[in-house]
Amino acid sequence: MDNVIDYIKENKMIKPREIIGVACSGGRDSICLLHYLNSIKAELECDVVAINVDHGIRQTSAFDTEFVMQFCRENHIRAYKFKGEALKVAKEEKLTIEQAARKVRYGIFETVIQKGLVDKIALAHHLNDQAETVLLNIIRGAGLSGARGMDAVRDGKYIRPFLNIPRERIMEYLDENTLNYVEDETNQDITYSRNYIRNIVMPALRKNFKGVDKSIVNFAKICAKDDSYIESQIDMGTAIETKDYIKLPLSYFYQDEAIVNRILRRVLSKFAKQDIESKHINMVRSFALEADNGNIISLPFKIKVSKEYEYVVLGHIKRVEISGSYPFRNGKLKIENYGIIRTTASKTMTKPKMHQHIIDADKLPDGAVWRFREEGDIFSPLGLGGTKKLKDYFIDKKIPQRMRDNIPVLTVGNKVLIVADIEIADELKVTEGTTRLLKINYEKDLI
Image (tube, rainbow, N blue to C red):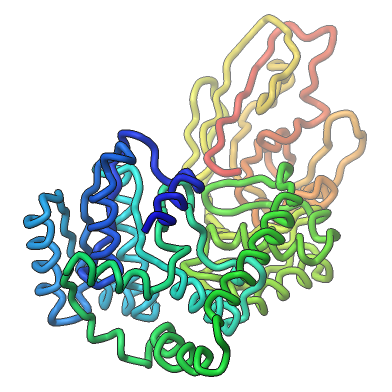
């Protein structure tokens, strides 16, 4: 196992004084990893603990958990056990059992890291697992990012010390150290995609092609280098991100298709429960280049894509219904689902700040109210001269259609005096004769 510790150091997997949580199911690979890391923890100057997750799928899973706990007691290894509900998650979120189990497992891993119980999670994937993963990803239609397989270190917190050694070496280590392990009976169930690859496809390939596992892994390493280079060419500096959606400039979609596809996968992965299929990536790319402004399409996982002038918006786009009217007054005005409009009197003229309007207080008509746009509203924008329909003004200003009903307007009758945080009417402008000012600040909930 000398090459394993070299692999750990080469990939900077473990730092001194870190606590490494080994994901241990009780199977041969995870028992081997737990025992091995515990045996070299002094050399690595780290601590090692076991993390066991019972996914709640098999009736014998409780036995496996107890096996891990007993193993840890005998080897003086601290252990944590957790129970998940993968079957429930699969049903509620319409996932396969494999996908649900992975979600449950990684959710627990994230929790133990966030709580400071461990610094990193060590996973027992080995070279043969890597070959199976790459082949499975290719069959599923993955691009380079899938063909590169698993990384030795992911997100700075998931490490795979065994990724460079074959299963045979793990079996030898178990024999050398007389280590027992448990067998998961579902590993033989070839209705699971990975088990079909592992138990049917790979044995057939190994029979006819010597060293096929290493060949596939070497291919993955080449793909990883190419993938990393292409990823380095992506610049998303002008994208606009909120918690609900991401706005991509339309110019992004005129880049090489390889770059566009990666941008879309990166964005959509923030809102999808699993990988987005290539057909949906192609759909979004075509939509961005060909659809008319204001059009919207739907993707899986309740993702919507909207064409909004020079932007394409992707994510959980919501249409918030806002109604009601609010008499104009000084002070703080809270408008639900919009934000706060704060008005203060002033005698000192300054240059308007961002998200602020300054108007001549004496020019403001009595009876003005804040409300939302209505049919027949007209507006005379500052400095432009003439009057136009508010609808036409929004079009000229390229305000996305989904946002137009959510912007408060200050009105008298059907005459618009202020479009909140966008423009004031020409009749409210400050001149040399202005003696009283009103400063109006906007603190918005929505972007």
